[in-house]
Length: 219
Ligand code: SF4
Ligand code: SF4
Image (tube, rainbow, N blue to C red; front, top):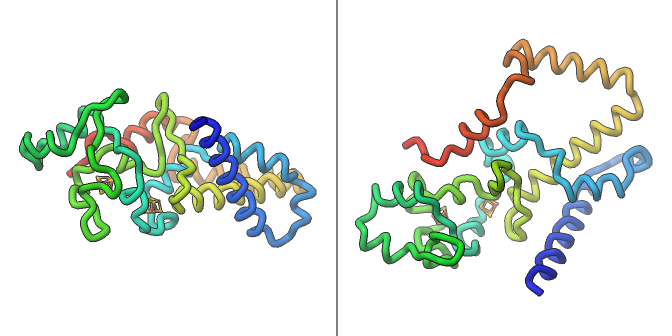
C-alpha cells in the first residue's frame, strides 16, 4: 500500500514537472520534433542529468533552491553515518548525542525530525557539522550514483529537473532539425571545453563525486 502511494506520488510529481517544462516551450512546433512521449520517458529515467549538471547545481544552489526550509521542517528521519557521528562529537558531549541520535532498523538517525531539532530561526544551527544527507539534499546517493530525489516540497529538485529537461528538449530538437550545424556547434563547444579543462573525457566522475560529496566537510 505504501509502495503504491509512493508510485502514485512520483507519477504526480513527474506529471507536474512535465507540465511546467511544456509551458516553458514557446514554439509548440518543437513537440512535432521531440514528442511528448519521449519527454515522459526521459523524465522517468532522468538520464539527461549528467555529472556536470549535478556538479553545477551543487556549487550554485542559489540558482535552484528557494530557501523554503522544507527539507529541515518536513524531512523524514535524517539518516546518519559514522562520519556524521564523528562530526557531531566535535561539537556535542556524549549525553547530547544520546539525546538526539537513535538506532532504528535502518541504522542511526536523528530522533526528532519534524522540524529538525537543529533548525533555529529557519537556519541550521550545526551547519558546518550537518550530516551527509543534509549536505547533498535534494540528491541521494545509491550505489555510488547521485541522483536528485523528487521530493514533493522541494523546489530545488523540481527547478533543476525542469530546466535541464528543457535544455535537453531544445538541444535534441536542434540536432534533429539542423544535424550538420548541430554537429559543428558541438565540436566547437568540445574544443573550447578541452582548451579550458584539458581532455574532458578524462575527468573522472569518481573524482568529481568525491570532491562534491565528500563525507567529511572541510571546516
Ligand atoms: S541538521 Fe541542519 S540541515 Fe540537517 S535537517 Fe537539521 S537543520 Fe536541516
Ligand atoms: S526543500 Fe529544497 S528548495 Fe526548500 S530549502 Fe530545502 S533544498 Fe531548498
